[in-house]
Amino acid sequence: MLRKARFWLLLCVATTSPASAQSGQPLREMLSQLFTFGDCGQPLCLDGSINAENGHGDHYLPAVASGNLALISFIEDAIGKSVSSSPLSATSSGATFSIVGGIPVRSTNSAGPIFAEQSRTMGKGRVFVGFNVSGVNYTSLGGVSTDKITLNFVHQDVDPEGSLGEPVRENDLIRIDMNLDINVLVSSVFMTYGLTDFIDMGVAVPFVRTSIAGTSNAQIEPFGSTAIHFFDGSLDDPVLNGTSTVSGSAAGIGDVVGRLKVNLGQGSRYGAAILGDVRFATGNREELLGTGSTQIRALGIASAQFGDFTPHLNLGYLVRTGELQNDAILATVGFDERMASWATLAIELMSQWQVGDNKITLPGPIQFDEPFPREVPSTGVTVVRENLVQASGGAKFRVRGSTILLTNVIIPLTKAGLQPSVVWTAGLEFSF
Image (cartoon, rainbow, N blue to C red; front, side, top):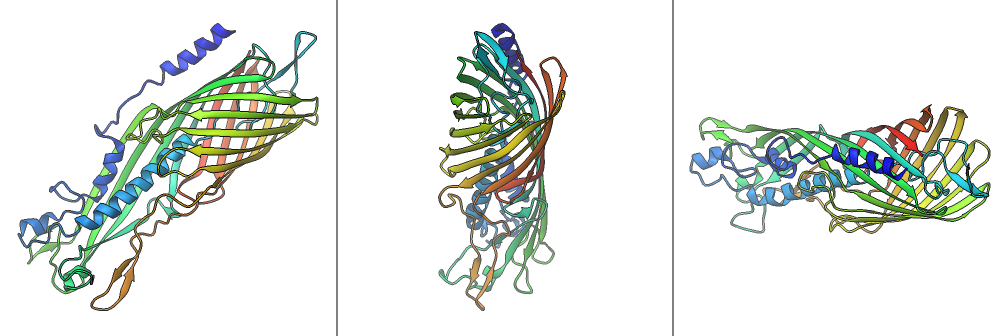
């Protein structure tokens, strides 16, 4: 059995060798290009004003230094956290066994949950191996559609300092309308081995492919009748708009997970267990394949079994070690039910509840003092508490012997951070 398990694990890991970004540069660096128009090599550097030698070509660099970096950090952190937080298949999905008189006896009727954890362990010497693929297309960022992200950049406060809007040219704004298309495909191989009748240990290795395509359209909005700032052209014929486009992808190993589950007590109907796992920072952060930091999760598991109906409750805590990442309280409730000898239905409600205040902020509103007081929003994107609630529904089908085919969809019920409209998953599981 162990030789067969090693074969499956090594085969799947071998197919997940890392690949670099197709664009030739890290995906994180590509995001800054969405703020670069022209050839001067810096975000929001105005080539036209530089060439006209009017001294206004770099007046928006201080604003973009704060706004650009904050947005890039926000997007990068959101992608990395979403990739690394993709739900793992349950450690002992499928048939579990109890030892009765020295003989393994099947102790479950259904094919088990998909993402929720059940209290039963597999049984000494039993092996569970699986492979699944999840696809995600992100559609909203901070409550705003990813194809309708708007940012406003303000002029540097020059002499006299302390009164934004004086001289009048400080009222000129650069508005950027951005369209982002972010897709992630996570292929995971996982294995669990029954060390004893009451202890399971396992590993999950994700292979991640992240692709980004984006377009930004910039428009200089002069406050007066004369355009002093422009992307191209001249004072007599200024070009006040610019476009930037990026596209690229990266693929490689994501954040590898090690897991250990201990059964605290198991009766014929009720059971309890604890599970701990660690997500190691093996995914390349610069390529948006992982968070770049370790995550530690501890879960308490309670399960019951009433014939073919098996409910589960998971409560736990997630420690994120990243500088800009918050810990979270975890709660999952669900059930699986055998609908036929070859089919099991699995329904789950998964949630994460942010601990503490947000560690990342975006620029606040722009406050003009002259020629009259007014306020302009820096962006429509907002940073809210990442309290995530997701509904998961799927089915397992026994196709041959101990081989199980699974399909599942996850639908987010709350909007926070970077969110998709749906996450699909398909996979295969084997127990022996």
